[in-house]
Amino acid sequence: MLRFIHAADPHLDSPLQGLEAHEGAPVASLRGATRRAFEKLVQLAIDEQVAFLAIAGDVYDGDWKDYNTGLFFRGQMVRLNEKQIPVYLIAGNHDAASVISKKLSLPENVQVFSTRTAESKEVPGHPVVIHGRGFPHRAVPENLVLDYPPAVSGKFNLGLLHTSLTGREGHDTYAPCAVADLQNKGYGYWALGHIHQPEVISQDPWIVFAGNCQGRHIKETGPRGCRLVTVNDSLEVEAAEWRSLDVVRWQELKVDLVGSDHESEALARVSAAMEQAVAEAEGRLVAVRIILSGSTILHGSLHREGHRWRAEMLARAQDQGAEAVWLEQVKIRTTPVYNVALLAQRDALTKIVVEGLDRAPEDGQPLPEDIRDMLEVLPAEIRAELEAEWSGEQRAEVLKDVRAIILEALGTKGGQVQ
Image (cartoon, rainbow, N blue to C red):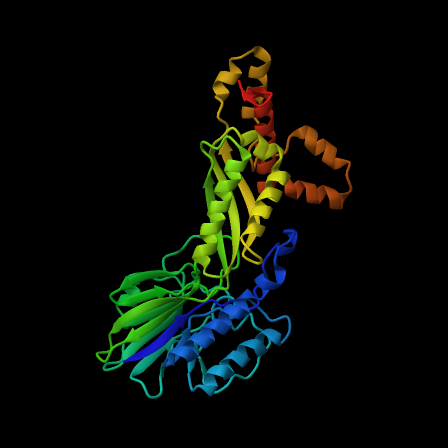
């Protein structure tokens, strides 16, 4: 029996885009998360005394700004070398041969596969052959699997591949292939990288995306880690256990405010969602985006007093403990409790206002002519910034806020629904 670890996409020192825009963000914790997750990966390999570590691409996030990133990785490989644990890795699209311009020699336990052709490497002391090929360029449109050799008889065959398979949302289509292409090679396990969401594609044979070691933004929610794979004496995969490595856990907290007529009740629901996220994170910092939904009398207040509501939620995050919860963003998806169609029937003026709101331009439509005329008189650098803000998601959010505030004013009087 032997065990190995399948990991992928560490993206060491990956920058978190737009982090500085969030006041109070735990910048140090988030920026150092990829390194700390990788340190946990190496420690897991040592603790479990694995036969080898296989990394399916994107060790790095792109070309190094200096040698610190490469030296960090090399230092972790030295830790494994001291425990006589070999490492097998391939280059992905982010650390392709054409991307990383700086080089450092690696310790003797690290085996890097060719980027020109698929090759096979035997694991010393174990009946294992690993087949792999790295990316020569950032974009690889061809099916690399076709170049992989057939399985070696009497050995446990592992395929190491960076691929989008048949395509996954949010990921570029690189080295595409079909599941049948992998199955036809006769390997016992395919260790895949590139797709950051962990997924077991097949168990006959095992075809697995390990996912990335550490989530880096709100689109990478949930646990992130690696697979600890056990191969029995018959050279068959007995188990592929999930092991979490992340030190920061990203989560979307969907809070339904249906029936919440008071602010205290709404905030209590937010607190309960935070408490559950903290409990599930098992001591990790939780970076959360709160999405408020449902029909509620608080709809107008949430839009009109957004800054105050966010401050109240930040206070609830503090109640969870120091460095327990960071509130990344609040999204308001609530609806009013009053009937907009009935509002329009109340009187002629109200009808004109409601119909005007319904005709408000949606995100992606050209700016109204009067706004474009006003922008023309502004300096170019200011005009460009405002046009960018009003052409994206922010414009749609502002329009929703304005609509909610106006409808609340029409539909309520003295806090009472009309």
